[in-house]
Image (cartoon, rainbow, N blue to C red; front, side, top):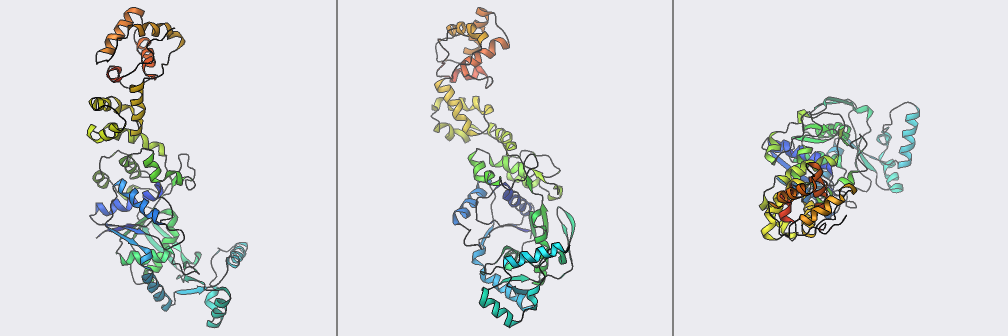
Length: 444
């Protein structure tokens, strides 16, 4: 059975970069009728917070991304230690005691000599007495996995055939000096224990994947199928890393972005397929194929979400938005008419508030100097309310006869005087909703 996972760290709110990884893994699992696991990487007790766990669940639920199984890495520490001991017994795990300063000096020396800055494995030469002495002086060391210094090869689901020379990579630290299990080991153990068959993640993990493949095989398992998607950039190709905090899913939700707008964009962004607005998760699943994605950096512009959101909102039936409209204080007898008039003229649902305020309170008239006399005369011809569907036509005909104005020279100044705007809904539909016309009594 196809099994995928999303393994966020609860150290902050998840953002569009996280979503890209989560969505790809989710769509792969669902398309194959498989399992999607939400795995909370909370092995760092100092940075992991329960509020972020709750928040990421809320964000995924908002999007309709449902998990079949949830795991907490903080509850599996004994299992990671068991795997670590197995590696020790195999001679593939060794303790190192260099300080950060010593490691930095080694790296600089290697670079000066034209060599790759790879850990020199000096700790392998330490005797038990040496280790005991260093442990007494410095405390526990870090634990590194001893790589077989050979080429690590695999076929990536997006990047194609990849090959990394393990001799050019430092033996990875899997356990910190304070005993904290790091992601590399915990992820390997979880993926093998939980039967994960496909792993999709960012291209910044490629080297990490190479070392994990060796660890997986050392533990007696075959690695899953890996695919590494491109990283997101800003609309001009700029790095997004510093901006991702402003692109958290909860910020986009607060801005009024519709879930399916975000999902439709992220399911195609960076692929050879055009972005198409989908109406359901089932449509997204059916149309998803990771083979269409490429390795080039992928430009993301949050502004692209709003035209999609506007289309989704315009298509909503009145029953779905009725509670939102009721909260604005729109009288029940006008509510459906209000939605019909305003739906094509909003981007996010919060824009409805501005339209109702305009209809309820009237708008400040917008009158050009050359139109002042015409508007003053037109207002004397405007009948008393309430208005109906024929008011606009009758009024504009009367103004046309009185002033000789016609076409755009007639309709645009009247719209501006009544609504304060250059564009908007059909004025025949607007007039019955208008409670106040502030331009009434306007004088040149």
